Length: 196
Image (cartoon, rainbow, N blue to C red; front, side):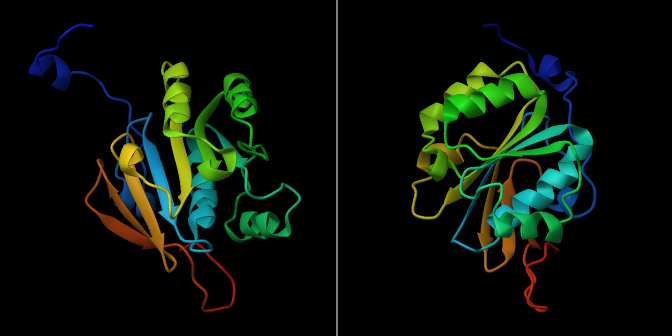
């Protein structure tokens, strides 16, 4: 391990995602290895947020969406994909609750983004996540973890770059890359769940 001076740190080139629109508003221009923790009550819009996020970031690389809670032949998953406009072939869904299997997909898939929906269904502990992140530390991997309410976030909240709490159809974002802000996730006015 070596030390760096202030000028050595400030002169380094940091690769960032040039997000635009609502994504820039809530996430800023995060570095390529940024991580988020998405929390909220059941049916609050966590998975909807992540589906739309997956479509948006697919322009920057492949996305692995681990749907541990819903099977791939689930009607609700089909509807969410359709309603959120997830059409990119770079977004790849798997249904798995096995961390070793997920690790294998990450190893062989050339992914830039990993979304795990949810860590409770995968039975992923904080130590499991740290081990995975350490194993793939040389890759340009960005991690996005859905956590159901009721779990302690004490260890998690200091290790992720962005905390997102979804309440009553709105995502409230606190993070390192932009001022605290929010965006609408669900719009039930027409009887359907829509993002934005």
